[in-house]
Length: 222
Image 1: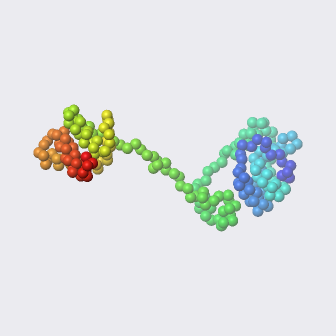
Image 2: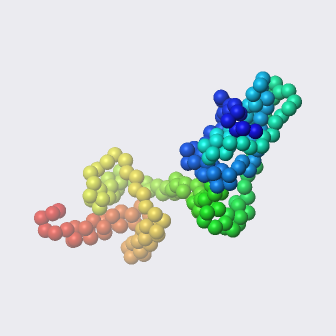
Image 3: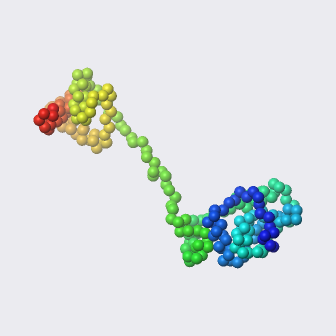
C-alpha cells in the first residue's frame, strides 16, 4: 500500500512531542520499513487511518513509500470508527519497572537511544510526601495562678528577663527540656528555702532571678 494514498485523521486526540516524532522518524529510517501495520478502513474510495497516524506520517518523512496495512473490511458506523480509534490510543498496558529496567540494561547505547527511553526514567524514586509534612507541634499548657500583688511582681521580673515591654497577655513557649530545668530549679528553691507552697517558691525564684540580673548589670544600666 502506498502510504501517500492513505488519509490521516482530521481529529486525532493522540499527539506526539516534536522530539518523540523525530525519534520515530529516525528509527523508521534505520529500519527501512514499518515494523507495525497501521489499522485502516475504507471510506468511499479512500482508506482512512484509524490507528497509526503518527507512524504513517513519520514513515513518509523517513522516505518509506509503501507498507502493509490492516484493513477493517466490515462496515463501520461513525461511532464504531471513533470507538476503535480511541481504544487503540487508550487501552494500553503498563510496564513492570523491574522488568523494564532489566530489559533496558541489556541494550547498548544505540539501542537504548532507539527505545526512546533514557536513564533518567529509572533514577526517580516515588516521592514519599508524608515525610515532607510538617505537623503542628504538640503543646502542653501549664497554668500558674497568683494573687494580684504577686502576679504583678512576677510579671515585672519576667518582662525584665525578656527585655520586653509589659503586655496584657503573656504566652511563653519552651521545650520539655526547658521545663525540666525550670522544675528542677523550683524544687531546689523549695528545698533551700524550706517552703512547700509552689506559688511562694515561684515568687522566690523570681526574686532570686531579679537579684542575679541586678548584680550582673553594668553600673548605670539599671
